[in-house]
Image (cartoon, rainbow, N blue to C red; front, side, top):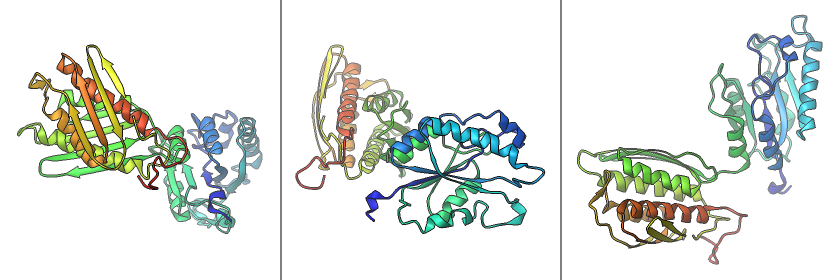
Length: 362
């Protein structure tokens, strides 16, 4: 079978993952069925991305006098009906009814319930995942050799919500996290080129933070930068090393660059105007045409503005020709960052999987 034709499976826990689990843990409380926030639109995105769904759930003592089957069947049927009415169909519902002390292999994190799936050559295991709200779900995923995602809950913690899970699994997001430490700076940069969000930037230089925020906001990608530099010396290392780290993160997140726009922008800002001719070519080159009248704007030396972009191009492998004109240095600098951001937005945009190069590599 062609690997491209294989189906990824999303194994999903039930209580606390698909439906809100009652605080008292009593099955009678499920009569007031409530779905977990955003689960339906997220599963629809995953369905459209080719995922099939399998419920894997531990239900302690189901069928015993303490946990009557009839009390379970009604809410379960209602839950399935709600999902099916929205176009979400589960390939299988696998339920273990043992107690933890029995230690049966059918109980998560054991793999007893899913053994038939291990022999299914039609499953794309590289893309498959497990979503649950407990550590046992993550252990189950590890035992199965797939990605585990712990849904955030007040009782058990976790770092994911359903929209984030859908994005991570359906979009194959272009992400990168870079940590860089020297005697002069300690920097962490995170980017997600396929998700917009409010930038989180802290470098110790207020005006520089404001400019970096423009890159994320107008570039249309999620950005987090945390820099601690030797500002007691001067601003040079902080600005330069932040640029180098951001460039590395962008280069890593771009991957093989398939589907990108590659090029991109002219932008006016009041009396100032800036033009960015950008090529994500892999060949670093920077040309700057402009000048600043002031030595500083805020706490940022103006001489470091072209140096920032040069360092960014060097580490990211960008070819950038940046031109700026105007009377106000604040406007000129901000126009530079915004126009590069807008050029990046256009160049980073992914449509299809064609490589925008006749060389076969970019």
